[in-house]
Length: 263
Image (cartoon, rainbow, N blue to C red; front, side):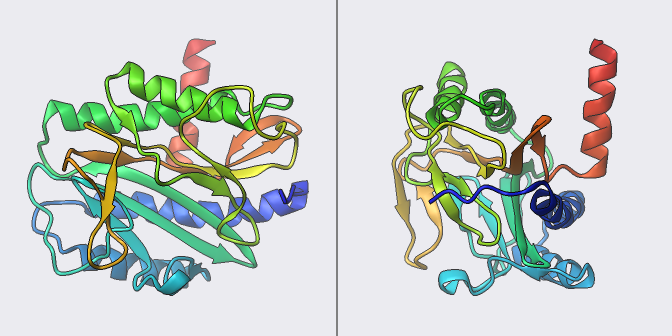
């Protein structure tokens, strides 16, 4: 069952999502060759608690960390460790918190130093496909209209959409209905209406979409070991249209400036 949110509940979700946004922005600035991934995890957990939030992933279904750190061919759920980032890596950071009973969830993929053109393009397409899907998130459309738009954008660029993992509803639980695949035909699924809150998260690969999970039981990688990228925001469909709840303040200002320049 889809749980639609009131305006007040969406405002609470925005507070939790803004905590996620702030911490991800700070983590992004930390990325450099030689950094141990567990340092990122420790920072994320400490900052969440400083901001009166609780890390959402730690202990969730037995996950052992607060942050998911996935490098190169790792798609999602990479467990932080003593592994050090290397020049040329790309690293996906996926983080969530619960604050005053509501969850926020977001992810981004960051280059480590100088990376290949392929890696930069993959990261850009993951983000672009999110925004293309977001264009279809409007009242009266079907849920799969969002899925189809994401898939079309990714495949147009010559990449593939990971099919084993999906976006999801979010609110008082980290994962709520509906599930939101990043692929499919348009015109299917529930009608979109006001109060819907989703974590939209394209996960894409430079090669094939098939995956396997490592022996740790969590880390998902591309079966062909091609590079993967992940981009995610918590969003809400409101009476004023769609709102991205997990944009940090600098991103919000950037979007406003862009609208002004294009006006």
